[in-house]
Amino acid sequence: MGTLQLAVVKTVTRPRRIFGATLVIWAMWGGAAAFAAPATPADALAAKYCPVKNPAARGKCQEAQKLLVAGQYRSALVSIKAAAALSPKEGVLNVTTARIMYSLGSSGPAERELRQARLNGAPDALVLPILFNVMLDLHKEVNLLNEFPEPAKNAQGEIASAILLGRAQALQSLDKLPDAAAAADRAISLKRSSSGLLTRARIALAQNDTAMADKLVDEAFTLDPINGGVMRARLKRLQRSGDMGKTLAYADQILKVYPKTIPEARIARIEIFLKQNDTIRAKQEADAFFATSKMFGTYYRAVLLSRAKDKKNAANAVLSLPKEFVKAHPEYAPQMAQIVIDNGNIEPGVTILGYAIAANPNFIDARLRLAGLRMGQGSPQAALGALAPVESSGDPRVQKLLAEVRAKIAKDRAF
Image 1 (cartoon, rainbow, N blue to C red):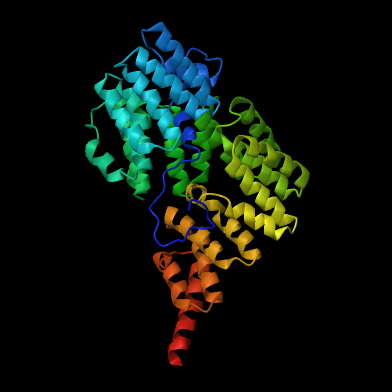
Image 2 (tube, rainbow, N blue to C red):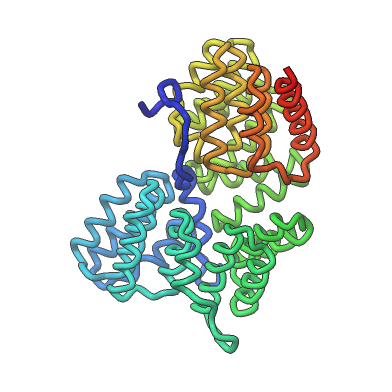
């Protein structure tokens, strides 16, 4: 029942960020000044998350960090649990356990582990940034704002900054962008960290201030160049610039540091090769992707099969993907839906679009595609239902299609 072939969309709960959760974790390091020139990301994580007294436990914790960076999450979980068994009541080990659980998509258990970490003495500076991300992943924005009120006006220091950043993210998620920007600005004034700069950059992008976002990302990169979250943001910045050469080169750099845990780097390469109609190199990248991430690899294999006019195998590849992939990456849904529709499978295409809309109710492209399909099937009421949640959108495509839908409904009623 887990595949798209057998699933039927009715209502779908908002998803956890199952795929790519590790990317958020890398952004939690803080500024580079916290470390003494770490040789690798694993060294940086070990310096931060493995200050335990028991040498054997410390070794197991360091092993877990290496496995986590390598994307071997289940093996990392085994190592960190072994560390915890050797040194019980070490809050920092609870924190790493939570980070790994989060990478595996287990946000609920991760939250419980983080709250135990606080009870076991882990510093809030270590716990709170991760706890906030987990709570947001569980859509507990209001809980976060209530549990962690705005610090007093004269509050100073790292904890106050962390709370303000958590609140900024919650406020952004609730679409309260001016309040989110104010909270992030205040957080940065207390501690100018890479995580704070990236949070403010995301808010700036949501406010359509690309220039400010790019400036903040550049500053974050200067502060913390091997931070995975920073690398990911800088890659997006290069993609926005349209410079394919620089984007390819930087994607290569990322893959050397994070060969498995920043899929955006390989995605960027594939998308550029597709734009260049270089199907040979795109296929090579898709095959490499399949070795590290079967779901991303399968998606891009489907895209390439579709380009080669192999409609049946392209559709089968899309339909083999679990619904969680669509829910975690709704931006791929229109392309996936088109591939299966091209093979004559309209309702599975509708299912895919439904998962995407459930994951991101404001995803206008998916709603437009769904409404268009329903109109083609002679169901203007269903089309209206797809567009109703975004009927106040300023997007001219929405208004144009809404006018057509309403005209069709009026015409049907006239008969």
